[in-house]
Length: 416
Image (cartoon, rainbow, N blue to C red; front, top):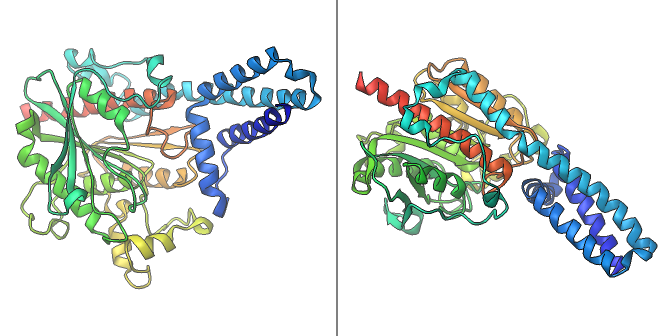
């Protein structure tokens, strides 16, 4: 048992170290590092409780008379200090997110939100949520599953998270686009903390599948996203949704596609057969997206995604079709008429580096007339918001603020 405890202590220290440090140039080791940093960083206090509980149980069993177990205890102590640091860092997320919204929307932005909607906002999180990270369902939300929005079978299905309580004027809509490097993933797997949170508060959320590579090549992915927007405009009123206000969100590949959709409304070549449909969105919240396939700022020269993107997603090299590589990059489409956007990125993201988000945001802020908020979250890893955590739930609160503000601004302009 002493040997088992010592070995577990080594693994725990390594996992905690991966969550604390920003390490990216790891080449083939990136997937292992990412999984370790992600699951340790977002579940830090849960790891701490489990490790302390195990140590207490073994102490009662007299294991620590063994010098190997004593060495393991020393290692576990280092792990506990690191986990406390990571937990405290995540607890500060609210401050970083609030500062991002203040910079973009103004220090008193909540005053622009109607009083009845301000009552739905929160600055705090509920411990029973992040202590049960994979418990998503919430009261007051009805889920309609596997609704077809196109002709690509199961890859053109969507789910609707509908508030049970009606809302005057209809529910504003939030469209969720899943990630997975454009080659894996499904509508059931991501953003459930955000969708249930918003649905409980009077938003209708739609999560979609879309065609995946390598079976489908780009632009099939963005065509499906736009097809879903068109479907929402035409059909969402049947579920109580307001077809005139659609916000879009997504992480990773979903962050890429949601930002690309927001910046390219009504682009005819990406709307084959539905060219006349209105595919504008009224707000966008991309999480840790890929914004520049061309890597024009030479950010990831020695950790390039070009081989995977060229072989599986675009199915051509940069040399063969540089125009396509550029067209699928959201940074190439920044424009003055972009909708309000809230970009969220972690500093420790090992799959999509923080510098890419910074360049995208600075470029967009240089031309956009609508606000562009940017929250850079210290310590956050890729995919951090897939399940409940301290960091996730603080970010969800801030996204709710941004969406309510965006909806209030839109209503004010349309009322005028």
